[in-house]
Every structure is written in structure tokens, then in C-alpha cells.
Image (cartoon, rainbow, N blue to C red):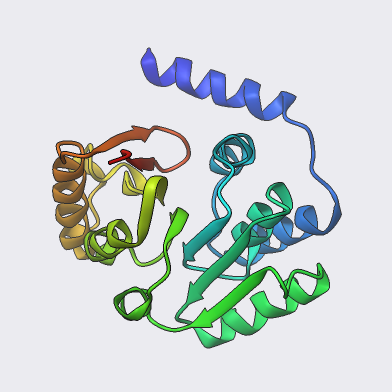
Amino acid sequence: MQDSIKDNNEWFLARIAPDRGGYLGELRAFAEKEGVPIFGEEVENFLRFFLPVLCPSRILELGTAIGYSASVMAAVLPEATITTVEIDPDRAVSARTHFQNQDLESRIRLVVEDAEAFMRNDEGIYDFIFVDAAKGQYEKYLKRALALLAPGGVIAMDNVLFHGMLASKELYVRRKVTIVKRLKRMLYDILREEGIVADILPIDDGLLLIRREYE
């Protein structure tokens, strides 16, 4: 019954959602056609609403892919500067092209490097950190991200429910068991961490939100 309600709600919301055209609409269509991993429409809609409320001026993104999510954040936060980190040089080339096509090069700094290595050496402090990179490394990313987060800042980590595998062993893919165990441990620990507020939104594949309290 609950699954039916959820499916019906998702169907209804998809029907009433406006179509987004323009460059970003074309870029999403391309990503979906080619199987490029970008954030889902529910997460996109949430961030389009939430980020102008949070109003971060310094953003760090882990996992650029072809630059879609960074482009969305730049679109809704015209005064923000974004540092985005991508390990795949081919995807980085594609992302850089998309940033240039939107005249975003001056506001988006693209770094081609392993995300954890970048954070280990980075001395920046960020108001918002968006994580959508290797899920098996999320524990390490979170530890580093917390060290770079400003008081009152927010971390958002996408896909933390990992295709339903955290909730049901029936959905396990054998080669993904280690990732599932790491994600479960991370979520259990972070929801109990002192000095921060954390919650998981069951949108798309699960979005973890973490806010550092003011000291």
C-alpha cells in the first residue's frame, strides 16, 4: 500500500512539473540518453529551492561529471563561487566545455584530481558542500568535508540509500556489499554525531543533509 501511494505521488508530481528547456534542459536530456550520472530531478528541484534560502557564497562539489549540477548551482546562485572536483579527465574536458558555453568559467573552478586528495590539501572553508562521487569513499569524503565546512554550513550527499540496497538484502548486488556496509555505518554514525544536525531525505536515491551548528 505504501509503495503504491509513493508511486502515485511520484507519477503525479512528474506530470505537473514544468519542463525546463534551454541549455540545461538539453544537457540533462543528453546525460540521460548517454547514461551519464547526474543528480535526479527531485534532488535538483530541492536544491533549486533550498540553495537560495541557504545563500552560500563558497561551494565545493565532489564529482563534476559533465558539469550539470555545478551549472544548476551557478544558475540559482549568481553571486556564488564554485570549486568542483572531478577525477575523470575526459569528463572534466566535457564539463569545462559546458561551463564555457554558459560563460561560467569565472565562477566555476574545475579541478581534475582525486576528491579526497584535493580535500586533504585544500585550505578553503565552504558554506555548502555537495558530494556525488564514489559511494565507497563517502565515509572518507565526509570526514574531510566536515573539516572544510563553515559554522552553519551544509553538506549534501547524494545517493546515500544506494538503489534500495541499504533497506533490503533482496536488492543486494554481491560486488556492492562493501559499499552498502560503509554507507550504513556512515549514516548510523552521522545521525548520532554531536555538534551537527543531520537528516536523510527519501528523494531520488536518498539525500543526506548535514548542518554544522554555530559554535
